[in-house]
Image 1 (cartoon, rainbow, N blue to C red):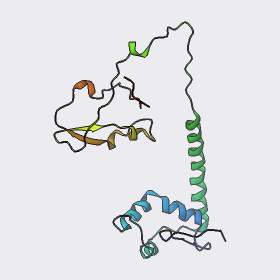
Image 2: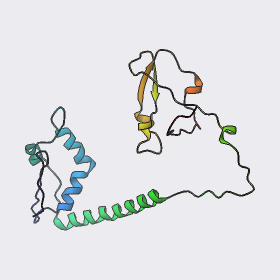
Image 3: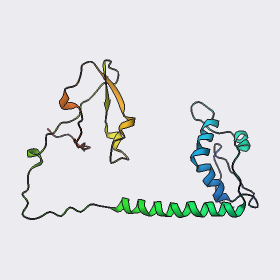
Image 4: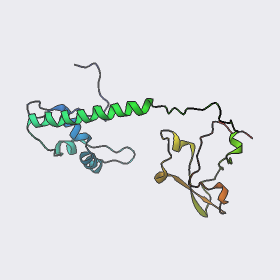
Length: 176
C-alpha cells in the first residue's frame, strides 16, 4: 500500500490484470481520441470534471493481453526516441565560430530599436494583435495564432507593426 490518499476530485482505476494491462489503459486514456471523448463527457462550470458514472460507461478497445503488451512496448520505444531527441534539443547550444579578423560593430549601427507600447484593453476602434512578455514564457517563438487583441482609438504607425525579418527581444528592463 502506498502512503498517500487522494483528493475528492481524483479517481482510482484498478484494472483487472487478467483482462487489462495498466500501461495499456494509461496509453488508451492519454490518446487524442479518448481525450476528446473525456472532454465531451466533462461536466461543471467553474471546474469541469468527468463523473465516475460516465467513466464507468466509457468504452475502450480491448485487444488480447499479448497485443496490449506489444502496443505498449512499441509506444514506449517511440517515447524513448522522443525523450532522447528532447534531451538533445534541451542541451543544444549553437556554436558560432568568430574569426579574430572580423570587425566588432555596435548593434545600433546595424539595427533600429523600438520598445513596445502600453495599451488600455478597454479602448475601442482599430483591432490589433499584441505580443506580450507572457507569450514568450515557454516559447522561443511567440504563438502567433493565439495572440491577444487590443482595440485602438487611432491606427498605429507602421514603425510599431512587426514586419517579416524583425527579431523580437524580451527586454529585462527598459533603458532610455
